[in-house]
Length: 201
Image 1 (cartoon, rainbow, N blue to C red):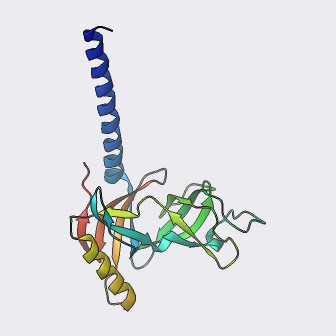
Image 2 (tube, rainbow, N blue to C red; image 1 turned 135 degrees about the vertical axis):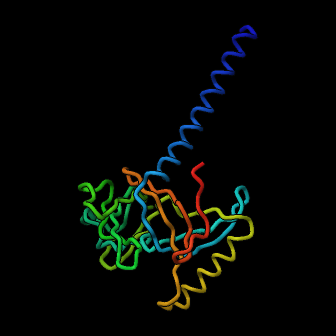
Image 3 (cartoon, rainbow, N blue to C red; image 1 turned 180 degrees about the horizontal axis):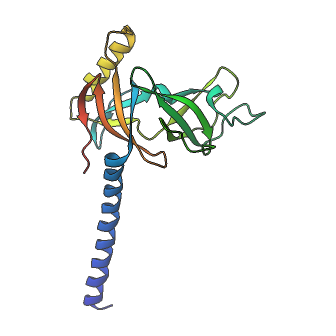
C-alpha cells in the first residue's frame, strides 16, 4: 500500500473516532439539557477511583424496591433473574421523587403526566417473596467531585442519616431523564443548595 493510501486510511479512521466521541458527548449534553428533571434522595456508600479521583458513591431510596411494587412479578419464581427494570417515579410533597410502580423488562404503558419512568437493571438472585426488596442499579450511582471532597461529603451524609432529624436538610441529586428512561446526574444538592453541577461538555 502506498504512503498516500496509508495517510488517507489513517485520516479516515481518526475522523471516525473523533466523530464517535463527539456523538457520545453530544448525546450526554442533550440529555442534561433537555431531559425531565427529577430530584432523588441519596444515601452514601464510599469514595475513591484511582483513575478518575474522588467520587461520592450514591444509593437512592429507589435503589431498594419492595417486590410488591413490581406489576409483572413472575409467578412461581423465588428469585430474580438479571435484566432490565422500569421504575415509575412521582414527585412527593417534600420535592423528592419516589417509586410508585415497576415492571421487569419494559413498562406496560407510557408514564402519565406528572410521572417519569427510569430504566435500571436488576441482578439475579434477589428474593421475590412478599415483604422482600430488590436492588436496582440505574447507572447514576457515582458522582465525581474535586479531589479531597468525596470523603467529607460522604461523612456528612452518614452523620445526617444517623441523626435522622426532620429539620436537617437532606442530600439529593438532580437527575435528567431522557424519553427512554436513561438517567444522567445533573447536580449534587445539599437541601436547596447546589454543591456541584455536572458540566454539559
